Image 1 (cartoon, rainbow, N blue to C red):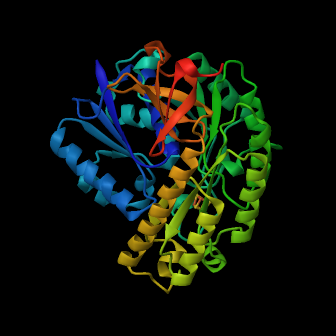
Image 2 (image 1 turned 180 degrees about the vertical axis):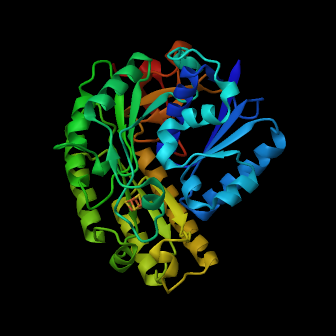
Length: 426
Ligand code: SF4
C-alpha cells in the first residue's frame, strides 16, 4: 500500500485544500497515514502570511528530512510562491508545487515519482464520520484576492479571485452531508468576492442552506467594506447559518486603515456591528487585528483597543505586524519596534479574553447546540457552539460523535458552556 501524510499550516483554506489533496491521493490508490508514521509522500501545505508561519514551514521541512529520510517531501501553499526555491529545496523539499499546479498536485507527484502510481482511478475508500479527524467539512468556494492590502502577501501568492461554480459548490456540499457531516464551513481567500456570473455569496449561501439534511452552515471571515452588511442581514434570518460574524478589521484607527490600504473606516465597522447586533443580540462577533503596523502611534493603538471594547468582540485573532518582503508596507516609515508590537498584541489578547468570557456567561441557563467533535475522559461530548464557544456536555450517547446536539447551559466554566443533553429542550 502506498501512503501519504500531510502537515498543514495556516488558514481554513489550506485545510480545505489538504482535504482535496487527500481525496485525490485516495483516488490514485494512495492512503493517508498520520504524520510521523512511515509514508511514501509527505505534503507540507504551508502558509506565508507572517514571518513566523514561514519559519515554521522551513523548520518542519528540516525536521521531516531528518525523521523520514525516505519520504518524498512535497511543498505547496503560499510558501511555495513566497520563498526562494533554493531555500525550500535546501530545507528538505523534494518537489515544490506552485499555485499553477495546486489543483493537479497529485498529478505532479505521480509524474515525478511514477513508481507511486499503483492505484485504481476512482477507487475512493469510504471513511466513516467517526474515523475522520475533523467533524466539520470545509467547503472551498473561492480562491485568490485582488484587494492588495499593503501588508499582505496573499494576492501575490494566490493570485486573482477565482470562484467555483455555484452548482459545483452545492453538489460538493450535498456529498459532504451524505458522508455524515453536520456542519459545513464556507471558506475561501476572500469569500466576499464570490461570484458565479451575476450570483454572489448570498445566492450561494441560500442554495447551501436549502440543502436537505444540512445541520448548520458556518461562514469564514468577511472583509469589511464589501458585503458584510448584507451578509449580516441574511444571517439574521437564516436558521441554519451559525450566528458568528468574523470581520478582519485589522485596526480601529482610520489613518492606520488607510495606510494598510483597507477599504473602510472604523465608523463603518462600528455601524455594521451595531446594526447586526440589533438584529441578532446573541450573535458572536470576531475580528482579526494587526498590532504595530508601520505608523501605528500609541494613540492609534488605544483607539483600536476602544473599538474592540466598544464592539464586544468575543473572538480575536491578534497578530503582531510581520514584514512580508515585496509588499508596499515593508518600505513604510514609522516602523514600530518588535517588542512594542508584541506588547500591544498582549494587551489586545487580554482584552479579547476578558470579552470572550463575558460573552460566554451570557449563555448560562440558555439553550445551545454543540457539534460533537470528541468525548473527553469524563465521557462529556466536547465541541463548539454555533457562536464558537467550547462546550462540554454530559448525557450524549457515543454514537452522536460528529452530530449536532442541543443542550441547556447549566454553568459556564471560563468560556466553556457546560450542560446536560438530557435536560435540553427539544
Ligand atoms: S483582503 Fe487584503 S488582507 Fe485579505 S487576502 Fe486580500 S489583500 Fe490580503
